[in-house]
Image 1 (cartoon, rainbow, N blue to C red):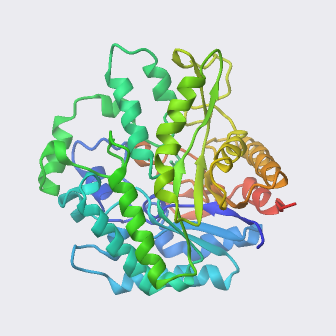
Image 2 (cartoon, rainbow, N blue to C red; image 1 turned 180 degrees about the horizontal axis):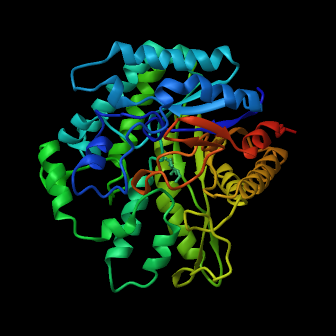
Length: 424
Ligand code: BGC
């Protein structure tokens, strides 16, 4: 199979007006912890053809995107056939254009009724999520070559760890933790006591303020419920669509040890990766997501030197991370790996080109070493809604003027599309 090279998005971050989702609620209450609401986003819901065409024209052959559960199942007992049809058309458009669709079923957002019924800490989610997955399998499965069930299944526990360190005033290193936070979470906001925010959410979701369990609310267990939801979803999906390759994605830092930091690195790898492996036995691939590295010495996370190069997100510029992570994972996993996300937020597109060039060099080295990497989708196709941080971050290969919704491809899009990656 040809190496899959392209870009990724997630429905809520690009489509706009995801009104039946938990995030829509969280963004729009008066004391929201979000810097701004997603609103129309990039109107990708209506402009997906233009966006996918830009990727194709640049030379890409794969597009990773997500189906929005809150659109498909806006109420507990309602599956919306028009929305299923919408995603059928998106997938068909990819296929007609020789773009391989890599479809995520859950990328952080859930229908708001899911939160009312217990959210991601309750065992109910296993049934809810796998029901939805089964409907997608029956309706669209045979059109989809790759399904990533859950994006960054380990993110809830990563967030919990960072929050715990930050809240614990007695522990050093919290600033460093904050800087190394990977996803768009506003940790300063989280640190504040936000009684009003949770009270407002509690009223809308109809649960107690301390029982709002959206996907990115920190979880201190090993994501057992999340992983069981994944397993059940895979089982049902496979039943209806045996040819679809199934997996999930994990957020994996490149952990590095200096000055006796090996034990700390092992602990992080255990919590971020090994704890999940047992649940993945029947999967066809693992989606790998890497943005940076974390360096540990024997006392913990090492503080960055002042001259260390940072991205706009505030963590280390480290394009070598993806190759290192692929090598690490391949020692413990002998099926295919798919880079479902890797990228940089920067206002300087030459820096993005440099990042992509170095990252893909690492991927090519893995292929040369015989590691089975089947694809790479850069995060992200377009500048988009970076969760609590709003629209300020710029990961995209395409800039978008949100007033006019006009697309402005950056040179990095053509650069990515022109790369030739090949197994030896
Ligand atoms: C998430 C994306 C996010 C990206 C950049 C990943 O953790 O899957 O939704 O935009 O990181 O922070």
